[in-house]
Structure formats: C-alpha cells, structure tokens
Amino acid sequence: MVKRGKFEIMRDILRIIQDNKNSIKPTPLLRRSGLSSAGFKEYYKDLLEKQMIKEISADNDKYIILTEKGFKFIERYKTIMEFIEEFEL
Amino acid sequence: MRPPIEFLFPPEIGAELIYSFVIVVCSLMIYYATKEMYELSSYKGIKYFRQAFLFFAIAYFFRYSIRFLLLLFNMSDMPEISPMFVGSISLFIFLYSSSMAIFYLLYSVMWKRWSHSKLKIYLFNLLALVIALIGTFLRGIETNLALNMILLIFICFVLFIAYKDSKNKQKGKSLFIIYLILFIFWVLNVIDILIPRFLQIYRLVIYIVSILLFMIILYKVLKKTGD
Image (cartoon, rainbow over all chains, first blue to last red; front, side):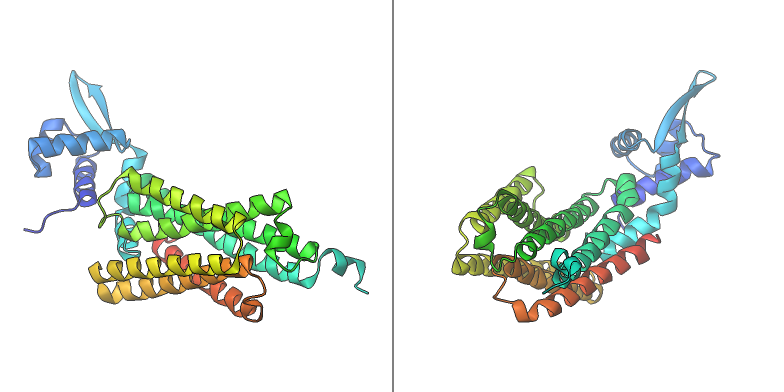
C-alpha cells in the first residue's frame, strides 16, 4: 500500500466530514480516517489550528464540521499538489 | 538640443521603465496568484517561492530607481552616483533584495533536501547583507565580477544537485533550465548595474531575455493556479 502524503491525509479527513453531510463525531471520524489514534490527533489538531474544521456542540455531543477554508482546501487540493510538483517545491 | 520633454524623460528612461515595470508586475502577479494556495496549505515550498518573487519585485523597483538617477543626472557609472544618499540606499536595497530573491528561489527547491532550520534563512540574510555591503561600498570592478561569478557557480552547483535529486527528471529539466538562465541573466543584470559600461552593447538582449523568462514563469504559474 502506498503511503499517503500529509496533504492527502488532510484532504481525506476533510472529505469524510464532507461526505457525512458536513457533521461527524470524533470517534467515527478517527475510525474512518485509517490513522492511528496518535496520528489522527496530530492531524486533527493541525486542521483545527489551520481553521479548516471546527467543533460544535449539539445534544450534549461534540460534532466536527468543515469551515469555508476546509471546503476550499478540498476544492483546490489537486491544484496545490500539481503546483508543488510543477515547481519542484 | 533635446526638446524639453526628452530632456526630462530621455528615451532610455522609458525603456528602463517598461523593462522594470513588466518584471515588477510579473513578479507581483506570481506573488498574488499563489497567495490563496499558500493560505490554504501553509506549505513552506510555496512560501519560499512567493518570497523569491516578492524580493524580485522590490529589487527591480530599486534597479529602476538607480538607472533613473544615472540617466537623469547623465552619469555613466555607479561610483558617480555613490556619494548621493538615495543612490547608495537604492543600490544597497537592490543588491540585498536581488540576493535574497535568488536564495529564496534556490531554497524553494532545496528546503526538503536540506535539514530544515531557521538558521539557513538567517544565513541567507547575512550573506545577502554582505553582498549588498561589498557591492555598495567596495565598488571595484574586479571585486564585483569575482563576487558575482562565485555566486553564479554556487547557484549552478545547488541547481545541479536539485536536478540530480529531482523525482521527475523530464518535467524538472525544463524548470531547472529556466531557473539556470534566470540566474545567469540575473547576475548579468547585477553586473550591468554595478559596471554599466561592461555590458552596454548587450543590454537590450539582457532585457528581452529577462522579460521572457519572467513571462514564462508567470505563464506556468497562472496555468497551474487557474487564475
């Protein structure tokens, strides 16, 4: 199996949230991300810091939703990767 | 006798203005076209790439102001302009920004291969400061030629290593050739400013090739960013 790159993992996590009608609890997100708990925590923290996702509370539960930046990242992911490759960055 | 308008704005100034304007605009367009990508990814390679073109824009702006002063006061060489405070400041900023532009562009392709530390950025700043100080205050022709040749050899060496390690040699080849020509013409631009009489007859060629190179890079950027 090919190892996923950092941006690919970020995109995959964001896509899981998007495909789940933009609202998912942390545990199913961890399970579906295919990452270890430690790895997931790292990416989760990073996505929160980059303001691509945010946590909301509803019915005493914590949900994760995408921000506008998160949607934009999914949309521009291919362009970013092609740009990095084109200019050997 | 020159007509008054030509006295105030000789044709050489117009050519310089167009040349600098095109390159400043190309550099700023590259900088702003990649803004969203950097904001989304916070990717260091994109950051260094953007900073290189921001420094190119600053450098070419000050390059124009130096040429403008030289032409306006009918001076033929940098030593004549040096006593003027504005001339010295412009030359210093031009040399510093241009060196930083080159270092950042090199670093954008090398940062993953080199162990990442802030120390390298400080080192680049220090080196650019030394180059700017030598160029501004020790304006001997031999010193500046030697300095630029050393810089060019260093750049060629780093580019060769980057190309050797490149994952996609076919695709990377055209990029490294563009960068190599860009660096060669950049050094020629610096020599042209420090020792104007040295490359006087080739000036038009330097201008045309430099503009073409920036336009090629801008085209590649816009094609990829879709702007």
